[in-house]
Image (cartoon, rainbow, N blue to C red):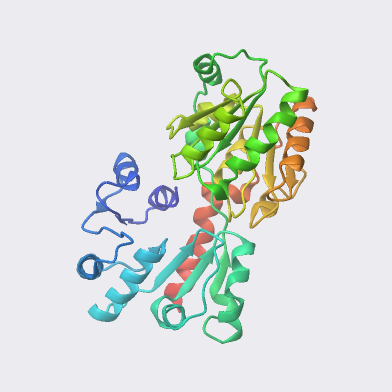
Length: 346
């Protein structure tokens, strides 16, 4: 989204990403050139790491970019070391997309003092992880900016087909449909949802619950729980899906009983389509649902989740308040351009 918006404004963008990644496929579809001689894999093989450093160093030197923007640990480290080895002049920006703890060890002290020039956090909650670095003078608080992630509005602006999803599921337009969109991992809260299902079914016996996302190590356990609790008719796993727009449009309630989130897209996508959202009060979630737009519940609390879903289903539907401007691609791009310009001026 950011790259597309930058290109619209006349900037030149290239994306470095592994050849087999979804990012490479989507970038090419958007007409954005990609550099695929990198792997960015979490591997103990040092040769792969050195290969990425060499490839990035040669690529950045040849293209003579004004700035390099990294988005994860592997590409950040590869680029920071490439700049050191190749003596490159380009400033490096890191966007950190999660709220996981940042350890205050020697390697991290080096990377944040010398390896990169500035950071962007996708929520104010993530900013708190850097307090030890601010206190030690390794980072200045002025070098850390909060910019929430955006919703792909163009993707959601086209025709939507919720009836297609309901036909696939074998339910009517009046059947309550509750969905959790996210990887099937413990942190996303599928087990919390399963614990809440029986209480919700007491009020809405025909309700259907769907888990939509890439299967993880927890999937087998989730399937066993569904079977052992006799919930096969009420809970379904749909796996990874490309038609998230249609699925979100078909939902009556979107839930995210997560344990850790920075700026979850699924919450904003549901808001964009006017769907009630029930999400945990963790990380950056309260920064999104801060205007009475949804239901905030304690994490790991099935009873609270059940009560909120029941209340959401009972409430009469109303027109959506729309998505706040700060979650739009335009705002995202303008915010990053300001950061880029400040970095280059410095």
